[in-house]
Amino acid sequence: MLLVLLAAGPVTATATADRAELRLSEHATLTLTVEGDAPLRVTPPASWLPGVAAAWRLRPLAPARVEDVSPTRQRWTLTLHADPNVPGEAPLQLALVRVTAGDDAAPREVTFPPLALRVVATVVLGRDQPRPPTDVEEPAAAVPATRGAWPATVAFALVVTLLTALSWRRRRCAKSATPETPRSRFERELADLRGGDATQFPARLSAAVRNYVEAVDGLPALRRTPREIEPLAEGAPRLHDLPELLRRCDEARFSPSPLDADSRGTLLAAAAKLAEGPP
Image (cartoon, rainbow, N blue to C red):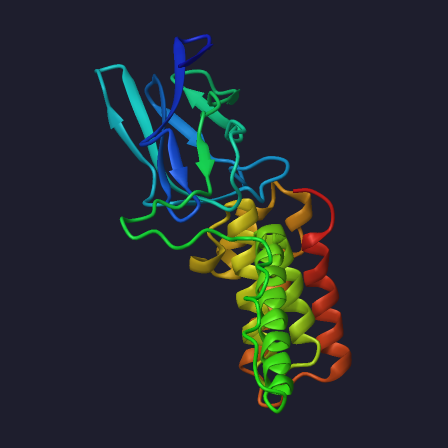
């Protein structure tokens, strides 16, 4: 629990998770609380994940609520859905919030304590476990055959050797493959849009941008209009042009004629800037 002393009284900020360890296929539920003198006002950050945020995707499960805990104090509570993108044990540090409590009109910055969450990539196997990967196996010794059958025997042995080598290489590639991050997925979608259907371009670009911003910045872009996103994006310089980009996509979606190549290129360039630099 983190205590921040304000002029009118103490403000407490807590962050808890419903589990300490989870797999990549699972999610955790985070509960954030801030308690202080009434009236209590809490302003969430534009992004819950400061810095490099590709390891997690956070989104609110419901609007924050404020309730009375005594005649003079109130508690603010918000629940977040946390999806891991990569395995690891690094503490999950949330962004700070701005708090105004009691008669103190000056907002204060309050930081939540880091959450110790361990993400593992192992899979629990059942009773019938598949055979583990093995090295290239030597083909069985050829059975002596008559002179007329030896070409078929040699050909069969070559096919077996080739298939075994291909299987071994496929397993090696699968081991070395890294999980796709929101940024790499976003860049791949932008590359696909450069040669895609012009009539579907605005809708596909808008969906790609909204999914990326929500995954990386924790901004509820999938459920907000450009006008509603505008105040949420003010605190992040990287997202300054986001509302205008979404507005232009919406205008193009309902236009009677598809965008020309130059207009599509301009929108793609604006979207690509979202993936430049941090987070």
